[in-house]
Image 1 (cartoon, rainbow, N blue to C red):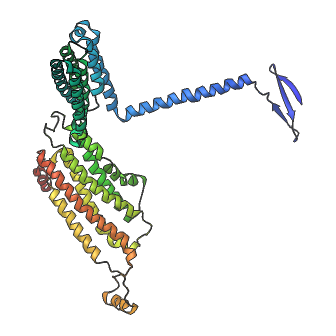
Image 2: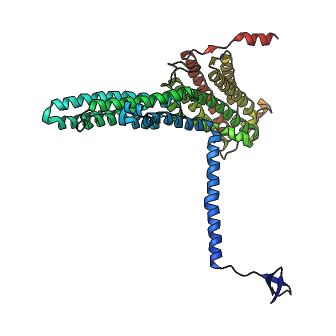
Image 3: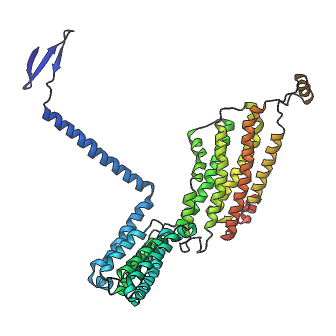
Length: 471
């Protein structure tokens, strides 16, 4: 072991077996190890986690700027309604119940106009109705003398039972569930609170006025400041679902017959899953859109429920595409000559069907009737007939003696090939699914045509098409 002093520091080295020396680093003390451990813990837990959280927060806002707009609108609404609590003249006008206006903004302000309208209307109507009934029950209870407690308790039980039971009715629950809950709350507060509070009418009036103030501010801000319409979102969702169905149909046939699968094709192939999972969103948006005032190309009585029917028809097509994707992944692989026999007819039908789906997407996007839908449907039906004829011309190997089979081959010529049923069955299943999908697409066309008639879609101008052909 040797030591040498270098730059005012003492360095220790130790001899090893191969004749060289290595530097001997002294071990650090316990206090230094604890300090390094705490330093690493702080960097890992606090710094890295905060940086990760900030990246996630930024990604949420960058992916959907509407969420940031909604947050700004909520802050503005709360700031405006708080004026009634900060300013003495306004505070004296609504009394100590000014806090109810703030609570109203918190619970009714939603991200889209339809949801905000729904909650505001439910809250106002339920508050007025429950307050009026509560005052009436309070008056009856006072007139009953000693039975006041019994009358109040029975009324609370009966009205709470009726309102709660109504929440189990599907049609009522879809539109007025929030109103039923507010009715129970307000009626209980007014009727029961009137037993200890003398000025029950003033209390009900002040709370109704504060709720009206809160709901008015919410409606004004959500409608006139960067409005987000549930109807427009539903309209856009249905239009995109048609495009996804068309992409999935093209992707299925392209992958199966050309066996050319890349990442982009695989992503389009999964588009039908979005259609299958959109049922709840479509129904919720349709219910909210019925609360919205007229906006854009949508009038007050726009047939929003027809979008739900269109979505159901699209999901029936998506189920066919799901079965098609399953057929592509079965272990029994069809021979190349079988695929070649069916390939052209299948691709023709797929192309005709996808054109119809894209035309339906354009119809909904532009809110116009299509001038060429009849021709597209005719082409699809012609492709279906051609595919059915192709299916009939496939010879299947039977249990005939080999001499009979050979004689049939000689008579029919070399162009006819014999094959086993197990070789044809996978492709035949795919062909039948394509034919069934074409029938379901025609049902979807009828549903969109019904929407176009109910919503008074404008007719496409044929003059442009004629002019272009003349040129």
